[in-house]
Length: 281
Image (cartoon, rainbow, N blue to C red):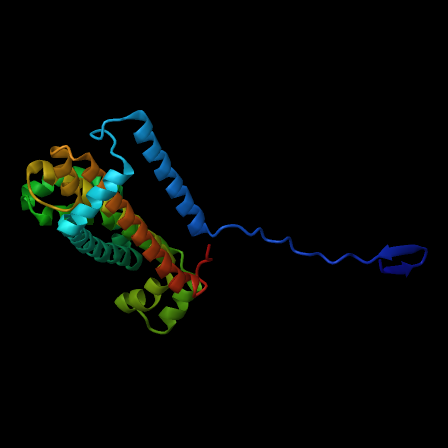
């Protein structure tokens, strides 16, 4: 070991610090896929060993067979299209309304009071509780479902966007105003891009609320006898005691949720993470 001598004392040079080796294991996707396969095997084993009636708990093989049959017949694609159409339209309207409220709140003091008051009143209100009123106003049609989706998505988006606007650096505000940016141009050119991490978080939360709301609303429409999307498909399968088809509908809902979550992850990686506005995981 190398040493330095200072007077009567010999000082040992510090040994170089080496970073610990990262543990190498299975990729995250493979690990989770193996866990899913293990759960399916346990499910199949339980059904075989316990002889539980298929009416209560069908086997994974029976669910896969029902899913394949309704995919081939077009029932599930048609129901999925109906649900996604209502969800996309309602989310877009909720997003536009949320951006408008957040913009008014950051530009005008009365707008801030309006957003605070409306969000305090309407945000805690379960969106599905508004459905009876929407049915009275619009009837048993798609407009009523879109209305409750707007109610579900508007407030998370508006609150997150407003929070993003208010956490922007004051220096950035001053520079924008010195450049003559006011009103709508200030919002579009400066505030929206700078608040993008908060906006994406609000969109994810709003989509999750809207997704649960649309399925629940379609279940109610199924009870009312009107054809609809995946919620109606599940309720119709329940009515005819096709439990495997009920599970198949739930599987489709879960898979769509995973795909949309992956889409948001890709958008974040290609925008706020790539631009250094947020750290990647």
